[in-house]
Amino acid sequence: MTGSGSEFEKVGRACGYRIEADVELSSDWLPASAFTMIYPTMDASIATAIEGVEDPEIDEVRIVHVATGWVV
Image (cartoon, rainbow, N blue to C red; front, side, top):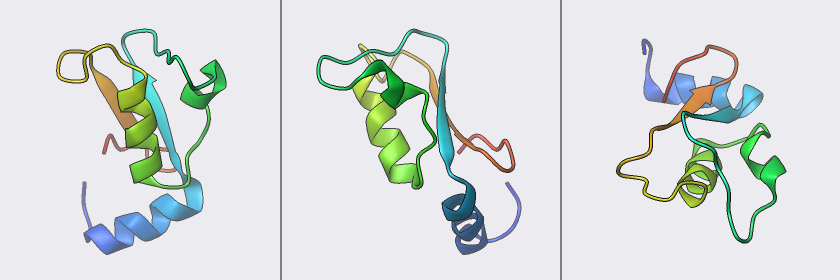
């Protein structure tokens, strides 16, 4: 990632973040659509991604900045 963090956050808020994973994401309390939507903030996407995996320390989940494709 290049540029300052605040510059990246400005762009991120405008475009959003998506969740990618090598495993199927599911939750007892979130609908399946929660794992395919675009989130306006990195924090919201991270919290949702963690909820969707059995073990966040083992299962690989990526938060991707939609406009740039950067994995954050």
